[in-house]
Image 1 (cartoon, rainbow, N blue to C red):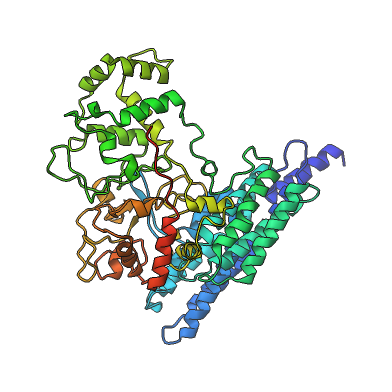
Image 2 (image 1 turned 30 degrees about the vertical axis):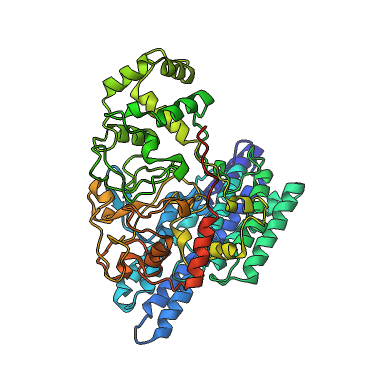
Length: 595
């Protein structure tokens, strides 16, 4: 047989097995190794899904052992999923949502189509209901979906082209996922298997990286060293409550992320998840000095209000961490109150939704909405553009900021762009917590260290307030901002709770899942930006913590059928709450400079 024919036949056979041979007929050892590993582990995942189905078939309320057996089978199935999650969630993203999507309805905007929740997280929620047998039919539907889909996973490799660069990127994202979501118990809050599952994810990383660590010098040696350290810590203590997450991050996971970056030849080799550039935001921002200077000047310009008495800085005061420290500020008329509390602008640029209800997708859109709002600034475009255009100071500032402008120099769009540029600079990341992560172990007290571990563990705060900004920007891609329904009460009196009348995002998108949905705010600088919640009705963090400790509105007995926060009490004692609040104090940046 001629050599050319052999290559053609071999290539066709490999393609049928799901491997795409790159030009030149060579496939790297890393790619071949990864595909072999995935096929093997995908088969084990499919087998564990079948076993889970069988266990659920045997569930009886009268026999608690059958329910526990189903939970143990779920643990096994989740562990097998974690062994292939790095691959699925990077290369087969649309398929991965079948297995491990959050147990809430995902709404596709602006088309208002929504996807029913499916997969392991839904199964977990149902297995922890009071009457499990009543949900057996739904549980079996879920396990059938998972097992049948898992059985077809190898077929999805057909025609799939992957490279070494992509594999290393999938590993980088998996390390971020473990460091942010995994150790917080984001996708297994009831089972509390986040630490054990982190170990399975790390073992997958270690196995897949083997070909890339051979003869690669210091970066490879460091990667192997930090991987082993991370795995040893997980094996040493896999208890979800007691696991020392702060030690895990500082001594193992963050250095591991940096070493993997070097292994991959990244230009940003020193990035870890607590560096804002790792969020892949801000790379196309224009924050040139002239534009920021114009934006800062406009931020404090009272001519941007209809009566020339209010500026952006009137409510977002730098000395108050860009808040006003009021429950609700006065409207432009001077006597009525605005609908919601004034949030801080620190880190506002690192979000994908603005306003409490997330109705603005960009900062520029938000700035223009505030300027035109009759109750906030009520600016008349023609008048303000004329006033600013006549002022020598602004002609010079706009010319410097927009040197290539060929049309009218002063426009509303450029005003918004300039203010946005200024807001994009409000991300100092210089709190004691940040200094601690950078090596200053005296920056935080022992109580604050314990508070962080509680925050990310027993208190479950980290399942909504994601690091590094402790807001709703979802790792590892940081490509969307989550909104939550927590059943916020109208006031802080939890003895006689009353439902809040504010419908949140429902006002913009009137579908039931958005009733009472609000953006998850950043907890950075939270101890100096009271009062709290979208209505400012909680005066202290102790009140806020008690609300969460009792399971939100649903846990307090209010009818909140779409609550995304667990209604089960957290069981935090006074000492634990105190330490969590002390940790939150370690998220306070240095005050903003205005000169």
